[in-house]
Image (tube, rainbow, N blue to C red):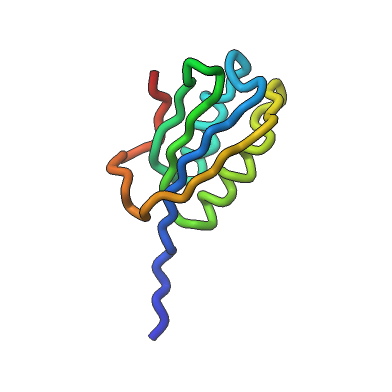
Length: 98
């Protein structure tokens, strides 16, 4: 009998470019929530945005694809993506942190 449970993926991403002051965190959180992911997004002092996200691998892949362009006002120049151990986040929802 085949296992039909979705594979869980956890990612850490650092997004560079014009990604602060353009609604990136708000839109990222909305996208992740729409996909049913858990985790967080926050601004970093160096101007990057950090994203931690966990959920079904296909939905995480959709969020990752979104990170490469972000909202209309953003200009993403680089995404540094690292996979983390599946299930390593203990979040219950996706939120903006400060």
